[in-house]
Amino acid sequence: MRAAFYGRYSTDRQKETSIADQERACAARAASLGATIQIRHGDEGVSGSTPVALRAGGKALLADALAGRFDLLLVEGLDRLSRDMVEQETVIRRLEHRGIRIVGVADGYDSKSKTRKLHRGMRGIINEVYLDDLREKTHRGLAGQVSRGMHAGGLSYGYRTVAVEGGHQLAINEEQAEWVRWIFAHYADGWSCQRIAHELNRLGVPSLRGGTWAVSAIYGNPARLAGVLNNELYVGRYVWNRSQWVKDPDTGKRTRVDRPRDEWSVTDMPHLRIVDDTAWAAARTRMARREIKQQGGRKPTLFGGILRCVHCGGAVVAVSKHQYGCAARKDRGTCPGVLAPRGDTDARLVGIIRDELLSPEAQADVQRQARELVKAHRQDCQGQARQTGRRTDELKAEIGRLTDALAKVGYSDAIGERLRAAEAEMARLKSTPPEPPKDVNVQAALENYQKMLANLDTALQDDIEVARELLRELLGAPVVGQDDDGSPWVEMTTPPMACVIGGVDTFGCGNRI
Image 1 (cartoon, rainbow, N blue to C red):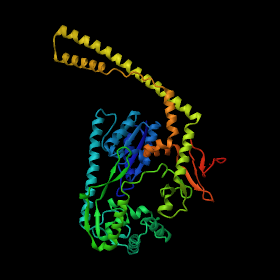
Image 2: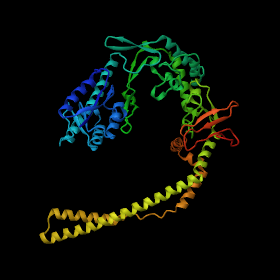
Image 3: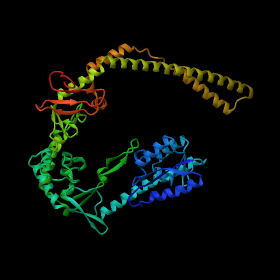
């Protein structure tokens, strides 16, 4: 019997030998079952709430299972696979469906047991409750640290942590604090966040993580108190518990979700003040004017963020009402950047797509797919009609048998209930007859499709978010550049748009227009 082992431990506090210890116990159990472990996978420092397919070792384990490389999987316990009840059940069912026996050495699980579903159901509940309990205890412990004047969150620019008895406390980093005051002063003087970021990068001032400065780090999000200009710690107010991490059940990824303001913990810490009230008030006043000016939001562009800069590979976005440009150039000043007219770029890219979709080959393919869909719909309707007919005949026969039974043995609750159910189902089938196949004029539908393509630019504007996803699939990541004379060009590197567009007036030779 070919056996595989999977081990996992969650945190750095657990021994690095934890997986080796798990394997040793599993190897002994494998020997008692007459098997030898031939495949070994593990994940170190990975939470049990992380989906198996998103772990390096877990992904390799699933790949080996799908390839049929082992018949027996040994784990210390089902919680090594997952502490999420739904994820655990999905993975186990997937493995057992392929005939793989799963044995948990410590928790006694064995997929050959008749009570396996009850066993793993109970273990799943226990494992999930453990995570919930751990999360609550961790949060309670952090709240206690904050109440004792300790630091329990991320580190802000301008501060450092100092180890003290019972934990860590914040202290001002005087070198960084001077740059915080510099940012507030220049913002109050009318400098834009772009100009501030550019100047900080030009001067070689490292950001909090040692990289370059971006507008997002400076302006941030006023509603979430994120960004240098919104950080209340600079005026001596320590805000904790603003957000929490929540796992998306579909993707398994964690996303930050804001907590209600009444759950925030705000503590006055005047010894951590860096910015005076005048500078803080000036920033608030200017931001309020900006928020009023920007009410209603900006309409997303068709190609902003899809296009990429030829110099840095970063996103090319709308930098003004009339131009696309490099986001790194706009926000950081760290790239030579590119510029391309929005109107011409949108029109020419949409034109390329329109020409591609209106080509004889594309039209023939659309017509073929349309006919296949119509055929499949007709077959589905016919199949449903046949199924309804068969079921109707079955119900007629059943009703006849039940009626005969009543005539012979008299009324009984069981026969009467079944007769009523059969008659109700028969009435329901008669009231909702199968949908007849629709007579679809494929040629007319194709003509409407062609009309839509002829006005593709207008059609795309109806739902820009959906249009952007479609454009991303069609174009991949087009690269924007400029010739020596400043003429912009865009290069598509992924099929089906394997061409280069640019310039202004005419189609050129080769791959450029």
